[in-house]
Image 1 (tube, rainbow, N blue to C red):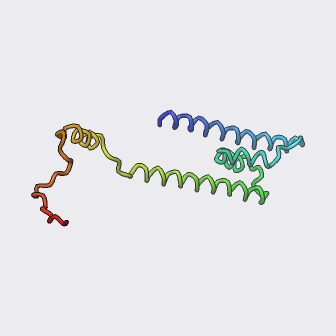
Image 2 (image 1 turned 30 degrees about the vertical axis):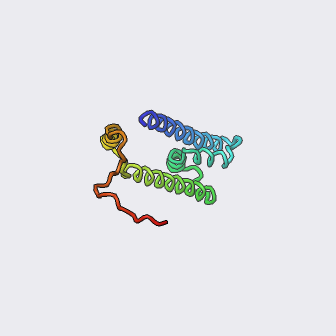
Length: 136
């Protein structure tokens, strides 16, 4: 679990840095009147996990902050990420709080099965057997 967390943290930092850099490059291209980065690419970097870096760049660099269709799409991606995170946290909480049989319970059950005497039914009754009338 720790390795997964480390890999996720490295991915999260890297993808947000890439998204920030994409916004910064597009801002520079806009000021120098060069060919711009397509909005779909900027939204792509935000969608695959770089929303925080994209939103930070949008606010800090004041880039594409007034362009409403783009801004709304970027906010929708952030909302989607928040919902996915909430579902993952809820599932993790349910899995964490679900009781599972402990090792001692499993060991005790195994020892009961091992130490049963041979040729004895597992649930022997203490009542005498019922005598049934013979029907011819």
